[in-house]
Length: 139
Image 1 (cartoon, one colour):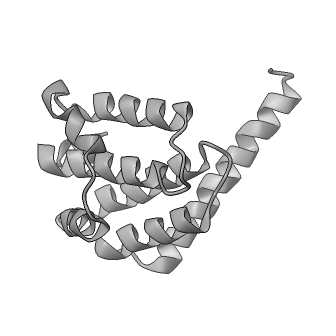
Image 2 (cartoon, helix red, strand yellow):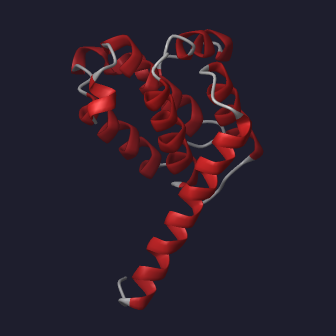
């Protein structure tokens, strides 16, 4: 959170726009994805007056131009991590989602190998958490 607090309001809003765009890449924005984005907007301190902008339709290229303004590498890595979590929220990872994550990462100067490394870490974490639920017999 300290890293994200260093971003200005427009950059934080860009994070949310990216999440909204990613959530719709597979053709469906389910309740878990909407809840994730709402929660992140609150966490990032997006003013309620601006939350409507999150779902505003704009071209992918315009959104990638906004993403290019995020120069803080740690914040860029955090965005990729959160995108990977969101892409897995509905348990369906589409080719469109993977491609979009790659485009966003490259727009911020993140190497494809680093994006893959983050994605693998997220998958391993999700598997680990699921295994914990099974071990401890959680529903």
